[in-house]
Image 1: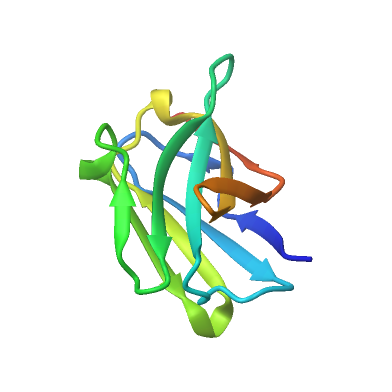
Image 2: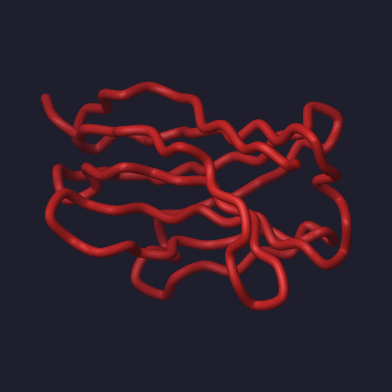
Length: 118
């Protein structure tokens, strides 16, 4: 059973870069049929898909966040990471790392709260 665990700072100052890491256990991070996603949920709002990285290290991002988002992978550590630059309080949210399979999401991390505040 694959497990995903987010880690990173819970508080980020405005204009800084938010950096989160997802550690994957119990499964392969390089299988070709999986996509590794970041999804967030701001307080009182719905889920927002941010982007994904694939087995060939190609990436795809939400158009609204593309200019500020970068997703990378370190297979040796079984990790993939999110960087979101120039954050504002609107980026305050619970951030989830999620495994994608067959055009759906089949495994979720527990989520980590990130607050953007000075």
